[in-house]
Length: 266
Image (cartoon, rainbow, N blue to C red; front, top):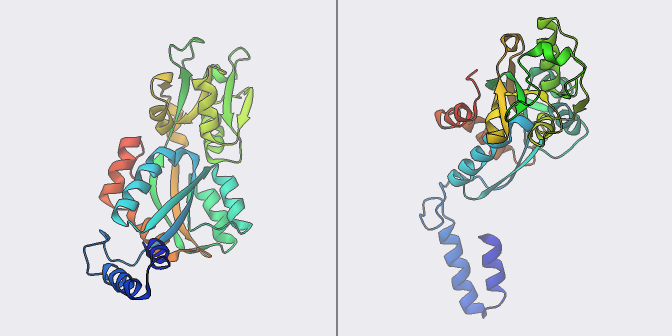
């Protein structure tokens, strides 16, 4: 609104411009209803670095947050938590970091790049993902130890890869992956395109995959449940909006979004 008013004023006579400026000042009064905003003073861009498995849930939350704070523009960067943590440590401009595991959050806590301490806002567990119809007849983790099926896993340094390794250890299976991908969405893509016969992804990704993927539960998933943590970045360009977004993810409204996506409450 401020930018639009400024452009109009430059095209008007001084007298009319004064009227427009005064009108703009009135419309920006926190108590006015003309802007449609809540009058909380939040504005600008909010940059959120978030684990790839949060893509669907956070996209919905971002839209809801913008509806509640019309002057804020939420921008997401979704990737593997390990890569995002490293970017923050290297000085990437982010306001909020949401990690799929406490391990990657701890990295930025130790480096001093987090303020206020992280909060756990959701939990997730793994499922076996197969293409619809399960052409390779995958039934459990033991199939991941056979040489025949084409297998995709997350890279070991990202949370979904670390969780998969814990599950295999609990099952006593030595996996033989054909590929390890940088994040869980890349793994899911291998399944939906039929490039692999099976993969390990989060339960939430099975839901996101729709009709192109089928999920198979396995008992060892209980040994590798991931706690999702979020925190405000110490050098956040927009600290007020960052704090408000972190608080928003703990509300009943946000928890409903997480539950719909397949996450468990912490």
